[in-house]
Image 1 (cartoon, helix red, strand yellow):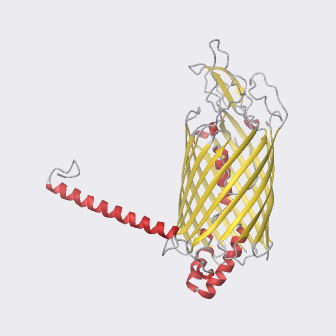
Image 2 (tube, one colour):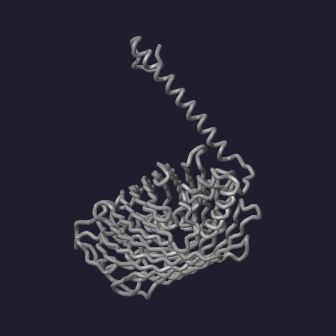
Image 3 (cartoon, chains in turn blue, brown):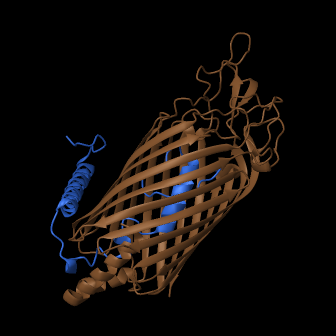
Length: 96
Length: 417
């Protein structure tokens, strides 16, 4: 009996099982990738000054676009009930 | 880490990487364009924010000028906003004549029978100055101020923060405080309405004044050569006028027939706290990076919120990148939020015992979803163009208008010289 209710005949059953195998393989690959990514992130290691090339890039800064950050803070400040948490700054508005 | 300190670190790392590891230096150079030695940087941007159904439209022009010196950087910024549209007042929708509602920011009501929205038009100008000074190899002092002005709101803010970088340059602790002084009033009367006063019997009060003290303690830490994490704790205490002089709450019967409309009334203080965490990671064997952040927020008005933000920067080649963005937000309602005030058997409004009530949709339980895409291109190592399109969708629990959506378009150009 096929795991898929619609897989009634042999042809569709084989096709469905192939799809199932691919899905399981993809899920395993995804799981392995996620594990590998998690390991990359949580692994704490000493970083020598000459190993900080990637960390010096603009896009690796915690605030990599200060103007966009300020604009987004203002947009969400005016449309939601909570704000703050990233930087200390002024510049309030009536914000209808 | 402050932008100035980031640039100092970037420059020192670049030199070390160049000396010891040319490959990593090249990797850094791909992204930054190798412009750390520039003395001046100009960043300009224009943003268009347009809500559906011709609600609020905002055009925002921003210009920032940064002057880098040996141990100091000075940033001057200017913002010009033009705002117009029909803003929800909080009043219920009605086809029957209601009270006289003076419109937001001096505009004119578009429909004399329905006060649930009110047309407005306003302009806001903001000037900011920020200075970052390296006190020693480990300490950086940052301070500055912001002045903002519009037809019904004036704001003055000052801030100061101190950052200490560890001896191994892997962690930075930052402590900062900010002070904000706001004046709030209606553009038509120059004052504020009586809280929970009937809008048909206006009793104008004087200008609303509010003082806010913000404090932030932050820690950023390099975990490994591909990962940086940040943790911020922040507190904000404000005292004074917190109501919105234009917002209205209706008193209505079970059939939502409006009996009367009243002005918004909120507490005269607010204490906010948040925990913010961020992870920045470069994917292994690539130049693609991920920014993932989460904020937990709580205040003494009863609002608690969760915000998750994910950005993935996919580098197309040495000059160009694409950056998809997803932001998810959810909040609970303020304790005093109500869609409308009820009425008793005699059709008299039932006023809240603590005299606090607001139908402002931003204080309702709500969820927001933002999806967006940014494209960036460096024409030269010192000139970059960034284009961004985002779509904001908001769903409200009980507010008069149960949805809001907006299209956000932004173009930015930065030049170093």
